[in-house]
Length: 389
Image (cartoon, rainbow, N blue to C red; front, side, top):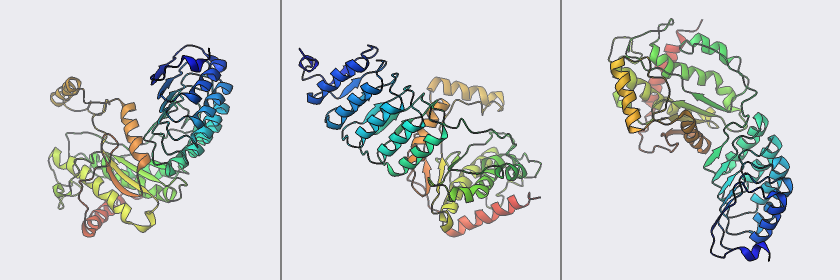
């Protein structure tokens, strides 16, 4: 009796996790799947499947019309096996979820997958966690994602991307330091700006006599963008700028236009509102400039994330805040937040968008008039220029 004879025509989910079927077992399974018209979910995790087994399964994927979920995590497929799967993805029209976590895939394998994603129109979830791509492979993937419009979830955790990068320590509340460190950066595809502070002292000043909170939450971010825009405009992937603050609460009507830089004393909330609203308006301003037509500008809201940013607050605010977060469980881990943010960043079109904590576009935002944008820009340039040496 063949394996195909053992298949029950009504079975839609088959879990063979940790059975060590190997390449030979993968061949029998692939043969059976050619004629099966019911199975939609197949779990082959940890089965010692190698290059040959991946080729058998790939050949079947080209013909199979029912399978929507395939888990091949924790096998030995490698880049050669992934090349076969990538070729199948170019023709397959049903697979929605593919898990290739921990499969010894390198940059060459990722390049094959990237080429497949340019043509595939059904895959929405791809897990490539714990492989070894490095930046070379990521560049190919980034190029593919500019064309692919269906992939919504991509897991690249612990995959070696950014392993060739470096860390530059700087006090980014100081415009002079930002000018210095941006000169060391030679290429930028995605610029993420998340520096910030929560402070009860709304009137604290930097050594350059700029409001400390706004130096981090706004002015320094604008200077980073200004200095790096030439690189972002020439990015082969199309540059993206992400300012992470609060796109949900940005409200230009709450700006005190007579005290924009908070030179005179004001309440804690005024300073907070200025940061939110200024970020809302500045992405509109940058996107309105014709020379930035190839760049996306995003103001995002990360939601409640488990970070120590509130640890410097007075205990009578810090303790209730931490208790509320613990009880309601509204806070997510940094990794979870990053997944949502990446989801939104990758699908962002040119121009400007406002993004919520799930990476989705916020649509009910006010479009500012040219006069408002120009007023903010002139104030911003004047404030930053004062710090130039």
